[in-house]
Length: 334
Image (cartoon, rainbow, N blue to C red; front, side):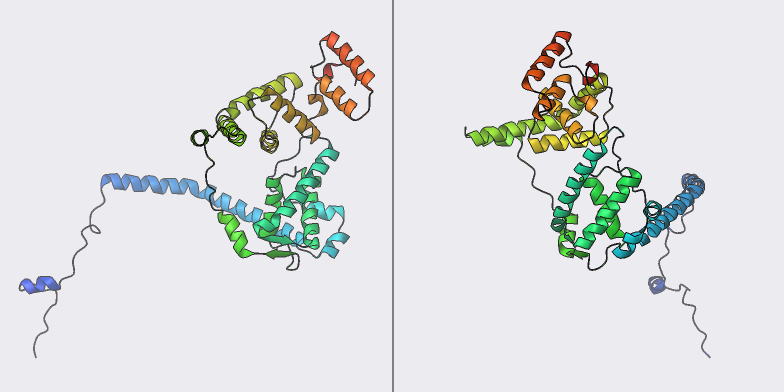
């Protein structure tokens, strides 16, 4: 019987071609540098493991709390109508939303919130969502709970966060929300808009017309606004703090920025910041003590609370005292 040949035995050069190549890298011994790097990596993972497990546990707990709250907000509207105030309080979930300042007038905040709510619902079809009347009622109930229990200040970003939460946890019934997936995906991806022409771009296109002057001025204001507005806002914030004893927060800055854009005001003009301060008072984000005596008298005259004669008399008296443009808290009248 012929003896079977060992396939790994090398007899001639042809046997070398049949052998499998040896992976040199796999058998390369671990160097001292790699060894200490591995020890350091393992020690770091060991130290971070308890924190990572605690974070995972906290995330699971928060997700469970949100799921429990979502089960209430997904109930039929008739069942929600029969629920008492305690049920709404127990179903409140904190979404980390900004709150209205304590000094704000509740009536003004509620009126501004209603206006923002209507504008947000009207803009939903552009994002691919269409709410029925029942869907609007469910969304509004959630917003009211956030305001009543959490003191949330309704703004476009706040309303979007509440709406996305209701959509994420499937709280809307099928007949309450119609979703256009293509529009939603297009809005989510959001094609990058073309950059607006710079001041230099408009300067090269300048033809001397009035429209060209307007565009050139707006481009200059926009570039200065983005570069220097932060420093000017800090100066204005310090001025409000020193004169009216009120500290401005981030939501004040966001409202002022939007106010400047909507009214086409330049941040380079001091009277623009005065108009912004009066706007914050009108929408309830600042107390009325942030008005000057002149501004209070002008507002009373516009509301026909005082006559022209009384307006001139009080302005004259305050001017003699040097308090006409001082905060209203410095005046002897209320």
